[in-house]
Length: 137
Image (cartoon, rainbow, N blue to C red; front, side):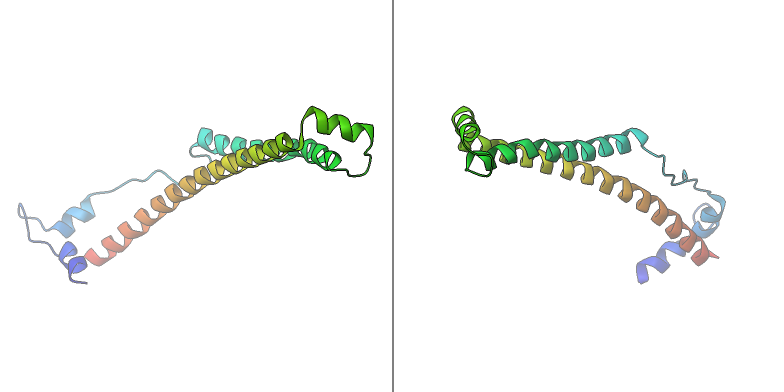
């Protein structure tokens, strides 16, 4: 509490109090718009949709794994898939695609969090400045 009141009522310097200097000084903030950082926002959407595409690409590998393990439609096709790719390779491919999905999903969310943090910081600065100006009155 003491630090906030001491900030507003500082010692006079150059014949003018700090509250008077605060009233004279106008800080301009650029407005928080939805189109700020359009490229960064586009990159985040690209990563999000790329992660969705990776999940869609795993479907054929899941089907191949299901067929290799003796699911319906077995017979010669099952033997060919199991011999050609191998169950172990299919499992590794599915795990790798899942890791890629997580990477791009997390990357897109990190970018969106940074953009939200920037907008919130801008709004908080405006609110704090208004409060400081109201204290100095």
